[in-house]
Image (tube, rainbow, N blue to C red; front, side, top):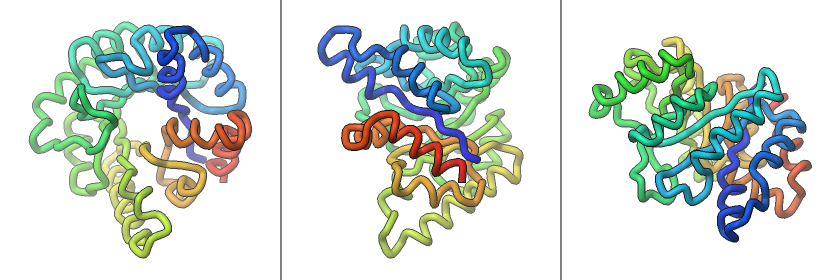
Length: 242
């Protein structure tokens, strides 16, 4: 079974748009966990336009009431971000190579270039007992280096998979992701996946049991506008159990 971590960034964006605490991030987190989701994800950016650094503290408090569930904090490892992560001590930290001004994540790490900068950061996080994940393109050859510099898992950036789904290239693209996942597993890494996954395409990606966890937020929130929040969360859980 693949675990579902619900990304709550869009809840934060909706809340912040009116300058009020509505919808309340903690209430939505409790609702997600009560429905059976394995974890929560937030990606607080420097401008805190959706999830905030305070949300990281608040969600850690929520998770204290749900033993066995996990908090994943994503972001570019700049000083303020790392300070928050080291204070909160989430179960998992996903390091993403974002420019602070990016609208959303759009590529994985270039470890040939970035390994020297990442290695001490990974070591510092692991010293606090935090599982470290590197956001990666589906390149099988990069997985050995991800392991060598200390990562525990990789998160495969799945926009290319989502874009190819139901096209003539879908089988070839899915195979590329499966090869990358197998390469990661073969060197002892766990495999997460995220970006543009939805109710239609997530099942095929996870059906072979290679993916430990998916992080889904934008599509889940949009689908909930049509189907209802509880219905959509339960639908993801049903797909991933299979």
